[in-house]
Length: 254
Image 1 (tube, helix red, strand yellow):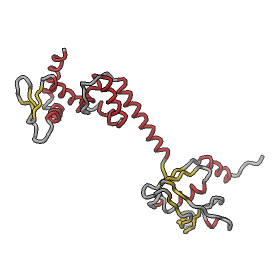
Image 2 (image 1 turned 120 degrees about the vertical axis):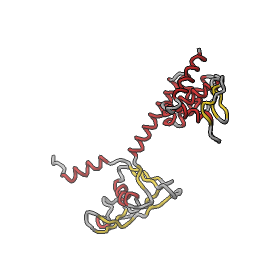
Image 3 (image 1 turned 180 degrees about the vertical axis):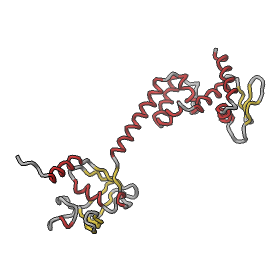
Image 4 (image 1 turned 30 degrees about the vertical axis):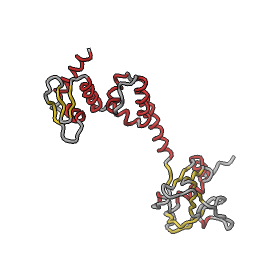
């Protein structure tokens, strides 16, 4: 049996490597958008301008390589999308070379990087799975700081609170996961808890010790006292106050 030529082998490898390509018109496509089935491009290989045409039954997209019976066909985007399967190699090549393609300096349509999109979709799926797992596998005590930070009603039943947290996790999994590692979330929960246990007294003008009514930190006009106290406790200066609050909370919870 005769071996295929190098050119034939290269063409076969190229065909096997082909995949469906998806092209999109980002703006102003409407229901149907037609791309002209011929265009003039600069051919780097020959160093001259050449006409390309989309003719489904022709092996080449270059007009000077097509037969006299070449028949052009419309190139239509539906709802701004055109998916071109691997067996329509000439249409893929025509669109890849077209001057209206963003890759060639045009501004009408562009190819969708389906592999990159698949990777992003997969990463999002993993993030969603991790966020949901946090709600499922964490104790209510571990979830409480996040619930407090998000302003949820912490007096509701545990199952109802977890359901609310689950919805939050599904809505924005990346942000939800980051909240668990955010020191601001943990400290804010401690401050809110200390206010509830009457260890701290939150007023418009500042945060006070409940028993002595001694001012810990003043609140600037128009700012939230709990937020100001949280930032203070996260600072080096407020570290002592935070340790005292934690110690008082431990006593209150015994």
